[in-house]
Length: 62
Image (cartoon, helix red, strand yellow):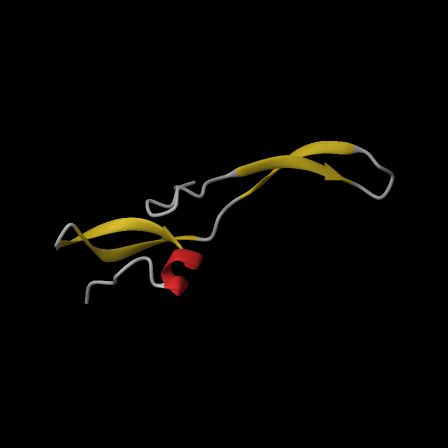
């Protein structure tokens, strides 16, 4: 899975615990989108998480 190029958010690892308390590994993937954004004055495709898109940290290119 891709990582957010703005904030660096990536995959998080943890442990899934069932009702009977059996434990197994699991992952949480970030909600990352491939968007066309303005990077250093020119439009470029980057991976950005939806929180960065919503907060305005990424300026979208039309």
